[in-house]
Each structure stands twice: as C-alpha cells, then as structure tokens.
Length: 374
Ligand code: NAD
Ligand code: GLY
Image 1 (cartoon, rainbow, N blue to C red):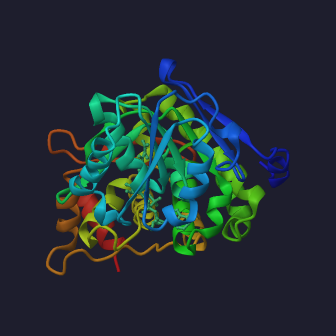
Image 2 (image 1 turned 30 degrees about the vertical axis):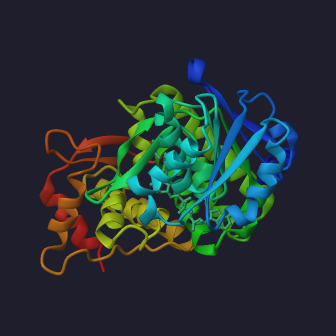
C-alpha cells in the first residue's frame, strides 16, 4: 500500500459497517462538522443532545450545534468533566440528568463529540435512556476515529476493572472530521497510533509496513497519511465486527495488547497512563508472550517494538507492585472480559498478520511480565 493510493481519496470518504438493520456508514474527511451532508438522513426528532467534555466543547460544540440546528428544534450541549477517571456512574448520571431536565423524549438523538471516553459513555447513555435512543459518534481523537467510535462497544469503568459495565449498542453514523485532529495534543496522537499499529500484526502486514514507512508523516499530521490510516483502520475493524458483533469469537483479536494494557491502566490509576500508551506496552508484552510460545520469531517482536517506540509510545511496562509485580498483573488481569472460569486468555500473534485467543500458563505470563517491566 503506497501513500500515493491515499492521494486518490477525495475530500470525504466512506466506510460501511455491515450489521443487517444496524448497518451504518463511517464518514471520514476534513471539515465534516460544518458540512450539512454529514448530517443528512439521521433520525428525525425535536431534540438533540451533544455530549462532549470541558476540553472539546469549547473547540467544536458551536460548529456542531450550528450544523444540527437546521435538523432539530432544540440542540442542547452538555460538557462532562474531562478524563478517564470520570468514566464513571456519577458522570454517566450527568447525561441522564440533562436528558430528563430537558424533558427529552425517546426520539432524542445523542451526539458524542469527543474522544473514546465521551463516546463510550454517551453510547451507554443512549443504550439505556428510555431503553434506547439513537446516537451518532463524532470522534475527535485519533484513537476514537480508528477504534472506539466504531463497533458499538459502550461502557464505563468500575474501580475493580476497566469497561466492566456497558452494552453493545451501535451508533446510527460515525463522522470522523479529520480537521479536529489539528488541536489534539501530541501525546494523544501517539496514543491513537497505538490502535492503528494494532491492526497490522493481527490482520494486515502490508498495512503495518505502510505505517512503518509513513510514521513520520503521521506524526506530522499529514492529512493524506491520516486519512488513509483512519480509513484502513476502520475497514479492518468494520470487517471484524461485521463477522462477530458481540465478540463471541473473532472480534476478540481487536483486543491485542489490551489484557496487559488494561492491567496497566487500572494498576497505575485510571488516567495516569493513556489507554493507547497502555495498549502500546501491552502489545509488546503480548508479542513477547507469542514469541515465548514459539508463534513468532524474535525479529518480529523487535520490529513491532521499534514501530511502537518510534510512534512516541512507551515500550517498557511499569512496575505495579514492589512486592509481587507479576502477581499484581495477574490479579488485575483476572477481571479481563476474556477470562473464562478463572483461566486467563490472551490475544496472541499466531504468525505475522494473524491472531488467536489462547489460555496461557501463568508461569509463562509471570516470566513475560518480569522481562517487560522496568
Ligand atoms: P479521551 O477520550 O480521554 O481523549 C483524550 C484527550 O484528548 C482528552 O483530554 C480529550 O478531552 C482530548 N481531546 C479530544 N479530542 C480533542 C481534540 N480534537 N483536540 C484537543 N483535545 C482533544 O481518550 P481516547 O484516547 O480518545 O479514548 C480512550 C477511551 O476509549 C478509553 O476509555 C478506552 O477504554 C476507550 N476505548 C473504547 C473502545 C471501544 O471499542 N468502545 C476502543 C478503544 C478504546
Ligand atoms: N476495541 C476493541 C473492540 O471494539 O472490539
């Protein structure tokens, strides 16, 4: 895949996600917030609620509100506190408070304007308000554009585990306005690259090679490089989710690096490490585990680690306990959603471009934690 292919992409491009009567388009392009065509054909209603946060709302809520005012008689804006540590019941309740205080009916359309935290919480609110109202994902982080806004996973965190309370609930549309990425902090851009890199080893080694060759363009926010990376990531995710919407099988491969990563996020305290940073380190650990099981060679691990590091992400995992670090990782990983009957299961690289979910002996997991931690 050459970058020149990306230049063929017109100002807006579309990826479809095929889920029967829950199918929807993912629109990708610059300045989509302001474009009326981004919003045509959405469910009709009297009211709409834009759910955002205190960082994103001042930047983009006015533009979205203006665009929506021709479609809905009342467009409300709610700015939630910003941060992973606010992905909680209490914050979720602020959405219900707003919906009820505005007397929003069951046709009200919710718009999630922000990163994955806003998207996951708004989706969960939409799934449960009056037993389900329509919602639209308007992701403004790279991570949300390539992953969290697509596929209908919605959730909040529990102190004992990440994303442990939630629902599968598909949006009516995903609108990825690439222009919003201009204001994204560098650290968040790198976090998004982690989820883009993820798609290579699990599904598409050509894409991984393209990412390697275009990492500096991506880090410089080259519009064509970003457009291609978002589109290809959404295509891969849409293909996987289209086969297994509710993760009874293949969808689990999208969690490559997440078992270790979620342990890092919870163990360090939500918000201390960005989700993408934890996933970056988690991928190094899961790849090392795959290597120790004889599934990939050392050169593969080294290569993936190099791409992750060049993307500006940490590759050395943090110590979560001075007493028994590996034990602490194992304890935190027990609450992973892939765990079955107390048996830990990991997404492993089963040869370049292929992933599989397997149970792994805890002795080996301990060795990998010891090898990968600072
Ligand atoms: P985030 O939502 O916390 O956003 C990162 C930061 O960037 C926040 O401070 C936010 O206010 C700010 N921000 C957002 N857009 C901006 C912009 N355009 N300009 C300036 N600042 C901006 O983090 P995230 O990385 O987007 O998402 C992480 C979350 O997504 C985690 O909670 C993770 O569990 C979840 N997630 C969900 C799925 C899923 O399938 N549902 C997949 C992956 C991750
Ligand atoms: N981010 C993993 C999934 O959507 O399944």
